[in-house]
Image (cartoon, rainbow, N blue to C red; front, side):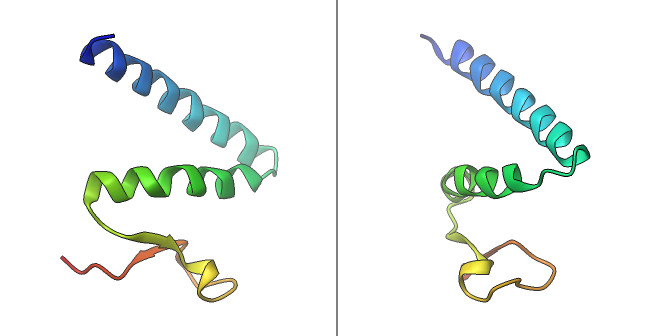
Length: 73
């Protein structure tokens, strides 16, 4: 596969994921958000060269935010 096909596949999957999260949330099911965080954190870390982590692992029910990073640059 060439790069353009990879980008098309990634775009298609992200569009499907976005729609799925919206549908689940409208139905009152927010579990998918936790799974999405676990899946997306490593991707965001790679893209932004940061060390994002789930703040709920630091403090249960962390106020206002789900993700944080100790990297300040």
